[in-house]
Length: 596
Image 1 (cartoon, one colour):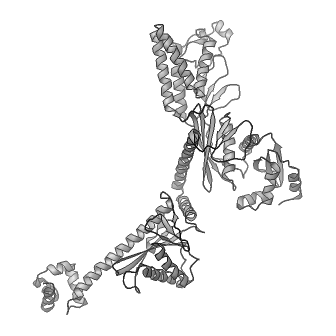
Image 2 (cartoon, rainbow, N blue to C red):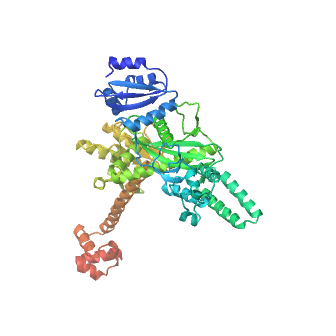
């Protein structure tokens, strides 16, 4: 309810960036949002007509509004994410990712240790990550360990402790994994230079380290220090092996973040790639659960703030698929059309689509009804229907030069065959091969009977054929007063062409879509069902006509012959004595003479 209290608050809101918080009558925080212009955004909740029932419910519960001003919309985005994670309001988007991902930590201390951790402690230490793939993180750590001997103890290596000789070299020194700074065998300056190179590797600057190792190796070899040169060569090979496992994507010199998004009715899937010196060094896909009628732009803005905060990203360029209403002097938003940056965006989108496919597959295995609803929703959208096609009926005609004309109708319910509802129609009023007249007759017979018996009509009628068959079916629906009440379309010979009433141009459907697969299954099933019935009729008809041509042989006699000999072919091949034993001497002689 838009009370005087709320009007007063909205009237005092400035048109500057900030975050707003909605509270209900019990003082419970129910929603947090961010805005480039607070006044415009907040007032829109009370002036717009909302399609989403959840939005209407949320607005009806707002009793109080609080807001915080910030310098830029990016700051608003980060603050919004922080508050949502802290308070988790009822109507906000839920980030469905409760994992704690590991980081590589370079500890703030003399002779820094380098190790993996899942705790991000703000103590001045440097963190790289988080890594969505544990194996990849350990591969990086193993590479670093192979390249550089480092300490892994937690001793306090202060200058005084080392000078006083408080420590002894451990086994790690004996096996070559550490240079024993604890007893003064490695200087702090030398150790810090090693840590500097490791930071370059973790930031993706492998080329610099590679060049340094090459130079050291050549110098050692030129001075006949072959063992040292061989060790440097081994380190160089390890580094190249690590680099080969990374994806070299472009020659982009600066660090960039890449975001893409795909959505459905309930969820959004956002993929994030972190690129440093042309190499993808981090990637992750997040799942967002929609709560209100959020647009793709709003969802992506939320994800960018969440991901950049989680990954502690300081990249000054962000690649995105479409414009966002975000402005910040510190960040450049790029929407690439061609080149390496477009390839990065395409790769991100590919990952997001795959993640979505896998997630939906998992959901649908646990809840089969979700797949049915998704497929029917897609069909409704593709076929321009006004309701879900839960009940579909498809018709197909079969005849050979006009002989034994039949029509088959198959029924799909919830995108699956309902064989108990299949029907055959032996054509009664059509003479000769006339598909249009046949379609007109069977459509009229089918839906006249359904109306007489008060049966529920289908959500969609499909006729196998082009404009002619479709026009004939429409004539019957018009006679019955059903035209416009039940959607109908025709399938052309080329399956991807669908014809609609009063539309000269066909609708083309993506050959890979599930909608086309369902339509193809419908037509194939109708064709199979119709051909089977047509063959049976033709077979019975040919048998009946040959035996009927024998004068003096009635229905009972034919029945006796077929019962004993099973087919007309065996009757033809039988000796006269066998025929006479079955139906008597005189009739047996008539049958034998007819065939011989």
